[in-house]
Image 1: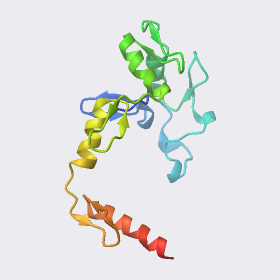
Image 2: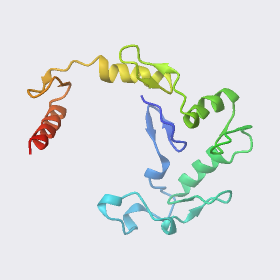
Image 3: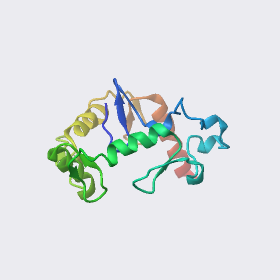
Length: 164
């Protein structure tokens, strides 16, 4: 599974989720009662976010999102703080790994194509996704090949747009 650098992503078993996406069942506010359009479902304007952090200016649609934010960003028992974003960590090694996000350092490289990554697990996922796939769907207009026919169909549409 791919790791994210989003401080609001958490793990539950083998699934990752962002608490702000799921409604808090104890909250009186729910996504179904808001006046959002389908294209902005799940996104509320700041004035519609009733749960305000007492430590900073962030506001949240759900109380569970506020709780998660406070646990990640404002816990006093986490002694190592990122000087760039304020996120706190229990171990200095975790802080050092996190700071690579801000510096742009990419220490891990794919041996096949040379692309660099923040973490080794990202290299592994890249190799599985890009280099180890069978690509039976070949484009008749260029040398590209795809693992899934739907991706070939999207790609061929690009060639059609180029001709016009």
